[in-house]
Image 1 (spheres, one colour):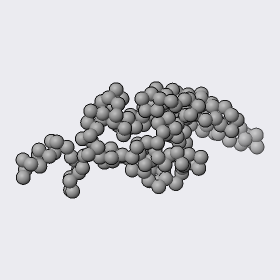
Image 2 (image 1 turned 90 degrees about the horizontal axis):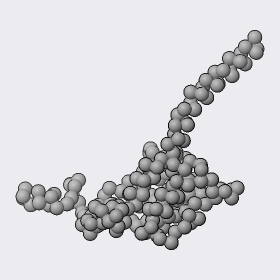
Image 3 (image 1 turned 90 degrees about the vertical axis):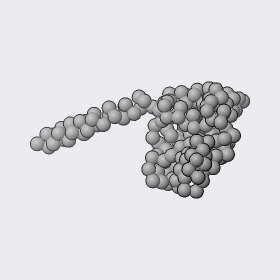
Image 4 (image 1 turned 45 degrees about the vertical axis):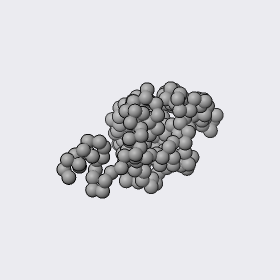
Length: 196
């Protein structure tokens, strides 16, 4: 009788583990690796920080290994982004208006806090909930590409990276919203004039 209960319990645990494994494996299958993120960043910073090296971006674990094959977390990916680009500029004009507001996250790991502060101030990443950053969530290649594109828009200096931001940099940086308005720009100014 006791053996039957133990066997039933073990089977129930096995079924539970098996039912959750596909979602975990699917999440890991879509995740970018530490090595992929480093390569994406090296390609991205060529005109912004041309002297940066792989060893400036990725640091090893306690065992001294880089573990480039491991899936990358949000905290790791954004710390690497900060190391690659260096100090990110403060958002101004349009970028300040569309910047993602950084909450007072309660789950930032101590090892990443200093480097992530500049990333949060730049407004290129949001939390996953109220006061929650979810630093251990895995990052996909698409998410990393979005983070990089947000940095390109923040700089707005290279037409090959963000043509719109580069061509319109002066106008976007000087863009101000009138009180009570949610949009600004030439067409809004013309509309305002014709209404008046």
